[in-house]
Image (cartoon, rainbow, N blue to C red; front, side, top):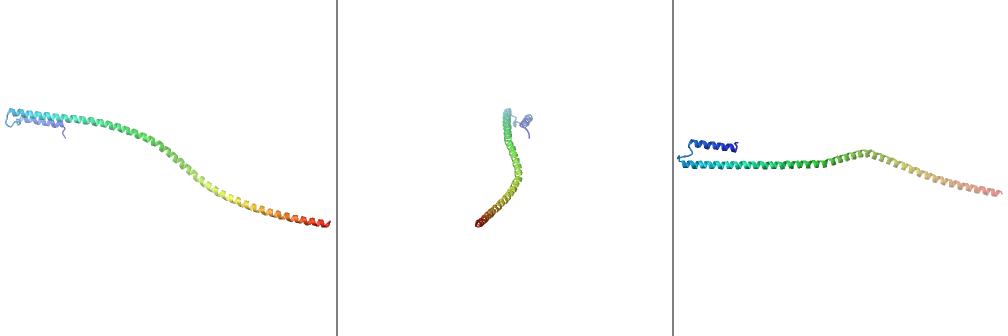
Length: 172
């Protein structure tokens, strides 16, 4: 693709060739030659003006693009800073949560055997308590029976003593 400057140079050289060949004027009139030359100069000036305007707009566009790129780079830097701050906020929380989860897992692993041991000791306690209560009942029954026997024995002894006492009184 040819640049605008190259196109202009090509058109310029074509105009020069046309002038040199004498084809510009069809009837050979110098007035027409002057008008045609003036029109060619005017077209050339118009072309140059348009070329300059295009070049100026191109420079303005480059300037706008550079300004925009500067703003984009600044925004990118600000976003990167914000991302870093966000990561810094999230990261300590993650570490603390991970530490707490590990501690909870450790405590859970320690609790399981302790819970089993507690249940085993509860069963043993219940069995021991039941055995203790059974022995207490048995003791109470035995004590009760002993009390009955002692009372019966005392009653019988008192009766015997009274009989003996009556016998002694009758002897006297």
